[in-house]
Amino acid sequence: MTLSSYRMQRIYLAATMNYGLGSDNPEELAYYNKIKKKMDDMKKEPLKKGIPLDWDTPERIDK
Image (cartoon, rainbow, N blue to C red; front, side):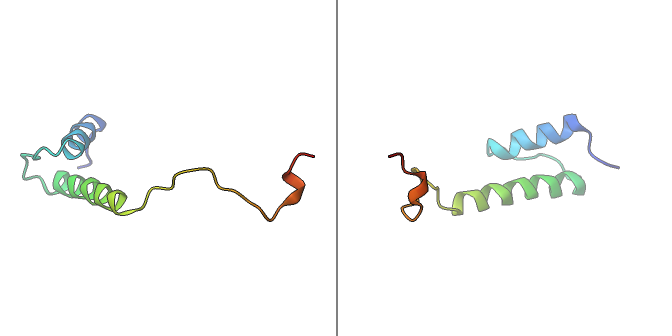
C-alpha cells in the first residue's frame, strides 16, 4: 500500500519539526527516515554566499 499525499505531508511535518512519528508502519518509517537523512545531508553542505565573479571574461565588462 502506498502512502497517501495527506499522510506524506504529515510525516514530512513531523520530520522537519523534529517530532516523533508515533507509527510502526514500515512504509511510514522509511519515508520519515528518508526525510531525516536528506535534512542531515543538507546541514553538512556548506552554504554558498555572495556573488560569483568571473575576472577572466573581459567581454562582460561595460566600457
